[in-house]
Length: 117
Image (cartoon, rainbow, N blue to C red; front, side, top):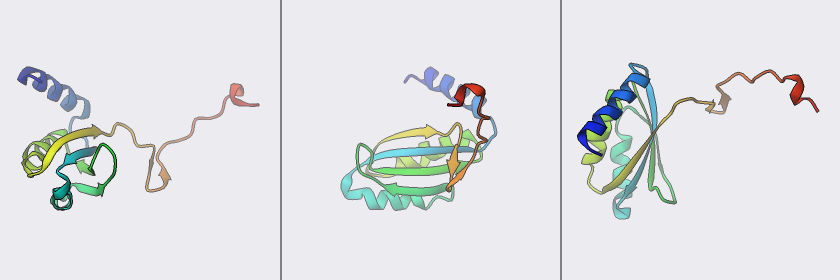
């Protein structure tokens, strides 16, 4: 991505999330031999809620919460990218939470006449 495209993206994300709290899932591909050390380094940050070592295309998944999009961006740029052994990261920002901690986080829509058998 060119610098202008990155700037446009950051502008859109900042506008969308504003100063609201941001929750994100960070998926990391790492050097296998360094996986535990990298997971521990990520886990030490106060904004990190959960860190999982997983199987599949991703090695580590971290769930993070920041007060603003800018703080998330700084964490990714300054912390995650500076950890030796991190080969790739993908970040997924949460837009809506439907269930958390076993509890539903939405109100069910009333069933209309068309949904009755």
